[in-house]
Image (cartoon, rainbow, N blue to C red):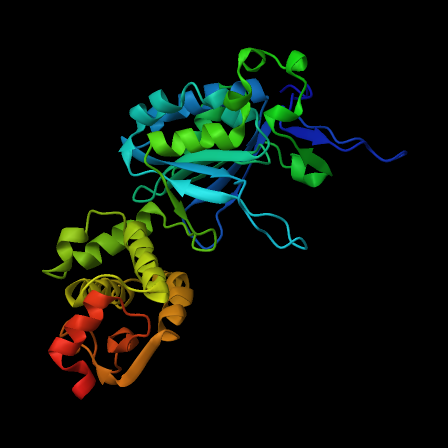
Length: 361
């Protein structure tokens, strides 16, 4: 087991240690702990030399599902953050794609993604309950239910388990973009790149276009383990209409519900049929909540609680019901999403409501 000090990426610069303080020793290794809010998944936090990150990712690639989506996190130039608060990066997801294809696309970007201090990236498959992410703090994390597979891989690469592993977040440090460095001081391949190629906003924008990525809200993040997804699949198979969604990523359906509510908060531009489809999505989620284990039911309720509250605040005419209660759902209480209509209606929805006689009731 080597205690050789590791080399941090170019995007991190540690603050000078105070006189008399014990110096921090950053060495290669990993820590392992149960993942919060799950009973069967684990979190790996891995620290290695910057030049080994790409090799670890390539070694992990064959162990990932055939399809994953790419995650990209970076700070955008047009952010108008509150001066009293730290800026928040924007998170982008790609559609699900063959994992090999993603690696082929990001290969030329990887050195910049690894070394720039304002960028984080990763891959995930929610249905299989696995995620890899190399953060802007330059720590590689892995969420998985199959921890033995990861520990075997790390042992094979001579990366030891350490209970006292230290991370850059344990001390003061600055984040640097590649443009902060003198060109002559940069190693290859950076010293031969143009300024626009080194600009993280530029190369991240390019990557989002290539992978057809879309932004997601930072406060709507969650992790469902494979066993939890299996529970959800079994529940959906019990319903003749919902069974077609059984083999899909349930996390994607939760994101769709969140997107629907966000659109309703601004101005829903679809017609009445499209609006009802959004309500049916929440019916599906409720059907799952009522048929899975209590811990998972509570977890899903917590995931959608803020989104539900946002929609409730946007509903008007709540004494009226848009659709009759679904026979597949318990009748002990009305589903609030069927009570009333959203306040901000686009022309197609308002037109259909008038035709249906909504305003004459």
